[in-house]
Image (cartoon, rainbow, N blue to C red):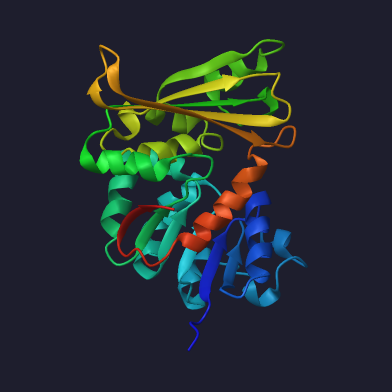
Length: 278
């Protein structure tokens, strides 16, 4: 006897939300429970009327097995706890969890359903989490390099990025916790890294953001970690990877990240309560 399709609710209808909705409607193993967007008018003629959720507070009525946020970090602040009381919840904007109170609250709320963190452009997440579980992960650094037009920043970083012309500029180098609030749309990869490397967390995982005008067609993510051994004498386990992701000029999200996110959504089930990388 075949299982009933898993019902998925989508929060947000930007580029990624549109991609997920289209993929869900073309599959037999999942079905669309609802789509909510800040402006419901944007869904008219694109999403079946029966799937449009006009009031996000009524999400419970749609019986979703999994709720996927691809809208804004504020959604987890406002509704994450409620979502987890009724369904598995996949946080598409994990920069929200750089707020230590929210991270603690959602970890505590994930007692009946799973809190899922998509790996996105974060390469090697499962291996890093295994090292964190064993307490052998000593340090982790994530460097993200993009064209200046690909960044959505605020404050001093936004002003610094405006000065980039012909040479690469390091916009930020420091803790991931300090970066997430000023670049919430760009550093979800770093937030996923900080959650996977839970023995280090947002304060000890280091992030570097580089604005490079030569990267018109690519986003680059470098992940470097140190494990067992003596880091000071350079006799510790060390691994460095580079992910070069094709990207449309000016796009915040690289092309390959869409398929990765779909895989994460399809894998976000059956792991039970707690926090899971997917």
